[in-house]
Image (cartoon, rainbow, N blue to C red; front, side):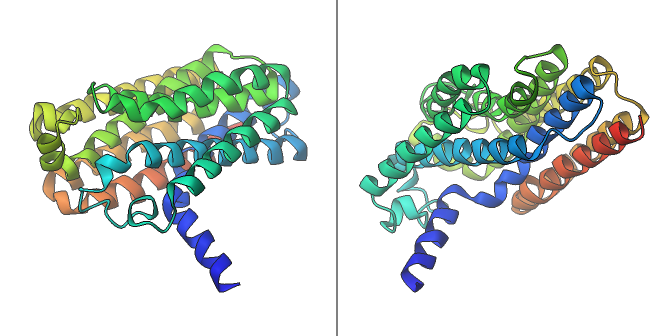
Length: 291
């Protein structure tokens, strides 16, 4: 039993499950909006709730494990990453490959039982999720690619409910993409010296701290624009707009924290962004409930 619990602990450390708080609110946000538009109720059924959650978990497991596998040569010399299970030997390469393949097949299998469009999209989604790790080796657009991978979450949510991709879900997708890209640029400030030394193409290593702060702020400004357009396109009401304005304030505070003290990047990255996604979901839910 102790060995089994240790394996679960290592897997949790590998995929950093607590970071699911970034993407899950937006999957369910798109699902409740789609259900309200299509059926007049936010509840889309227990079947889709279970299948949607399983798809989200297996897709994220696949993405994180693939990233850890492909980045092992980059992570090993990095002091910040040296204790990861994929680096220190707790999870060997063979077991990591098994974990990746299992989650890939599970994601496709589950998507098959949602609807035809979800099944067809499961393949390009896995390609996108698995391909992110290559970009940091040759392009500073890696931050945007990571953002787009996370931005696929609301697209997946609406596809599960409606078997369609309406305009509002695309706008929400773009908003999430720039949101994630923006805070990933800030997070990369921690590795600026290491990335310069190893020749990785992060925005901080290529353009410096001040330019990175500015680019991140612009990404987050674009985020709010897209989220406002999402609310307009989905015919949402005042509570939704209030939640988006509050999100803008949270992002502003995030930049203040990082600019004042780089040692608090983790706080800005996890705490504030985690609260943001949950908070925005709550306001969207209230907005739909009061309609």
